Amino acid sequence: MQTTSDYFGKLVGLLRMADYQFLMQSPDCTHEIWRRYSTIVSVPRQCQSRHAANAILRAIDFPHQL
View 1 (cartoon, helix red, strand yellow):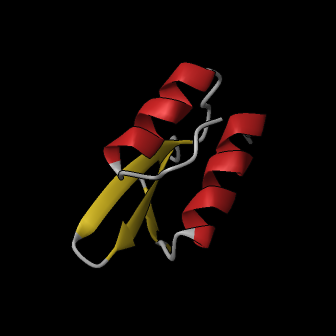
View 2: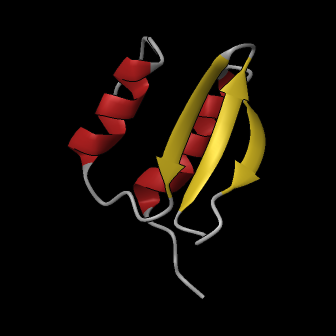
């Protein structure tokens, strides 16, 4: 079983704060798919870079950065 990084947990927490809902896990278990209305975002479970985490937050227009 793969372990998750700190940035993954922080991203998931911020997505929940922004009313995103867990939709599904990728077939190879490396990403989780989250949605809010028509916006869908893929979050890697092994997100080890703060820059990648911030890019995901920018893509969904989230006002906070890590």
